[in-house]
Length: 96
Picture 1: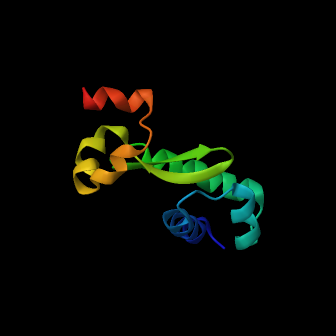
Picture 2: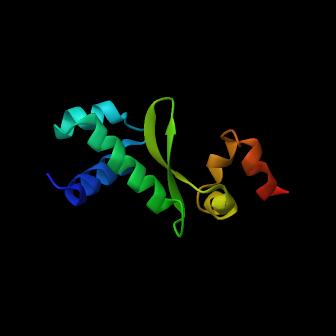
């Protein structure tokens, strides 16, 4: 499959995954080489780093979309109960 189709499939997988998906799992499901999946993940990561309210990050070997910390005050107005979740030190400055 071409990179555009693979990119769209990976974005859809990551959007619904919640806890993230490993590159190995993506490669297995899509039947693509791991190196190609990693290349597309890198492309998505770069694309979402700018001009988006979310970004792609790898945590514990799994890739997932995460909201950018600077938007936390608005997200907590939408979902106040999420305020009980642990806030990282880098996010705390937005609540001062």
